[in-house]
Length: 415
Image (cartoon, rainbow, N blue to C red; front, side):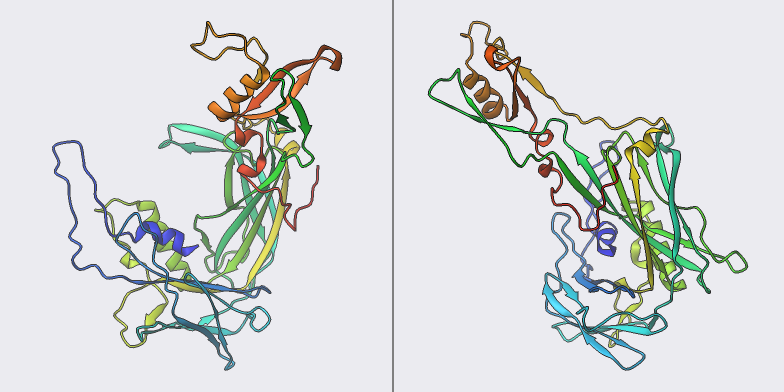
């Protein structure tokens, strides 16, 4: 979202110390003015659209203050007006039963704040967008650490069908993947009156498989020059280093959305992208060159940050299975899980003269003192009794500590 990116580039306080002969620089902030930040997008999708309002801030450790007492509405060139519902915390939403964007129509965002200020966006034409033709992936390498090292992985690309007169595009994506913890907790340890004879109760709802989700936060834009084929081929969407995350260990999904944007919006995203690449150096180019399409109608000189985005959208989902990537001979991620299989010969470090432990002692030492999770007992056979207790770190035993066990509505298991 726009606000996530603006949070970095519009913090106006930087206090740093250089451990050399250079004296620290402390910026003068007496002229600081809090600016309105607008993040809004409407499309031709059949869902609610959101406008987020906040203000820039000076304190690095504080979240941007939301604007929660405004009146927000959208008008179009057909004379319609739609009020947005105030959801609190600076979030304003349309009613999807009352409003849906239509390609070919022009829209204007209106904002009235509690201090009497009125803001209005430029009139924005909703352009149609060509369908995404295909999403595919290929083995690739990426340079890291200033080009001194390379990472192996896959790059995901997009091909688009030919559009009408579309010249400027933007893409966002949402990743979802299924994962499995390496040592799921399958039993509860139940103490009895005899510390050498615990009871093990099987868990009916083992938290072994879960899903994770990630939204894109990079700016993906592209322009098509006049005279070139009016379709997109081999557009890079993202690179996944196969040995750095568990994304590709079971089944992975990426949903890509394609927007057809105006020249002005393309310039906005391109400027914002350049500022993000410059980084947070206090001597770097300041962000006020980023143009907004929103203005204070009574004070046009007031700076407003953000952009009211209007575009048709097309989308396509791609599933990638572990076996598809394994055939490429790429390295894969290994969970950093420390799993311990202990018997009654175990003695804690520094306890050489301690009496032999009981099973309760082992459980207390690992689960209470060291914050491990008991996962299961191991028997050679029932007649020979208990051989080992197995322990691991909590995040390696319960997938809900890093994901959700609720299967996404769209998910289709292909394994």
